[in-house]
Image (cartoon, rainbow, N blue to C red; front, top):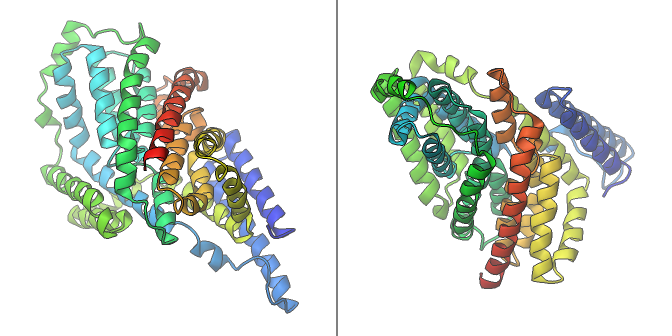
Length: 445
């Protein structure tokens, strides 16, 4: 690592994250300030060395720093938020909510199962933030109508969204970051099909283990609704929830195209961000005068948070810190397969719990690209670790934070302790299952 510039950049990165973790400042504003500070440090070092005529000046211009940001991931996230916003305005999610509620017959446990399985399925197509933006308001609306507690639903949905996203490249921002870095480095052997085939059985296993544990943990908190309340809800036809048939069918077509492109486009090298941005903004054109209203509903706080984080991590790459970590990790994982799997599961998982799984994935993505040359399972292990590690603690993933924020808006907040006592034991069980499965996969593939 370049000294002393590298040390200053690292200190700013740590300081920024301590401030974000304190929850005393807006995380988007803080991450952008952090990016600005490292940009100034790099610029100052570059200017001083260039003025002195140094053949290899330290630091970099701000343009160089910005060029290293994962813009394809940012654009993908904006596009998916746009599609979700159009679908929500059409009444699609209210229609889905009533359609899902009807088979439950007012049985809360059955409704809980239906919602969890639905989250599991859509998490393969939507990133975790979009999944909760879809399911959160829908869940709260249904639970309030049925006069049941929505908190067990929201906590469980956030957890499931995290682990259900593992088999899909587009299922979570960390997955995209890791996959894009591997493509950028030109490494062959790891692709969307390898991730799906390796991780889909594991995700299903985790779901089957988690459902009975959810029932046990929420025992007494999932009572059935009163019969008269159920009758009042069921008298409304799902079709009455559709506010705009044009936007409803437009959203259906857009989601269908995205699913097909994400499923079969990866093999041809078609990038998810290219498909998402084209489809999303074509849909926006078709909504005509409502474009500004729809764009205003995109979660720009998350977008700017990611831009700032990507900028901070780019600075760590410029000063050589990530290369140093890569060499250290490579020396550890090269000893034997068992050590490699255990290290790549548990260390990123712990880091994701304490920091946030997005910056952890950004820092470790170059290492995953290097390890992919040895085995395509290693990047998949990192995808698993950062996603499951994201719910060891509530602050580890955006889905958790969104779920807790939604409950707070309803004046019925999910406390840190409420989330912790459900998610932490489950995450440890999931990590143990994953370690065994991935060790087996590393021997087979």
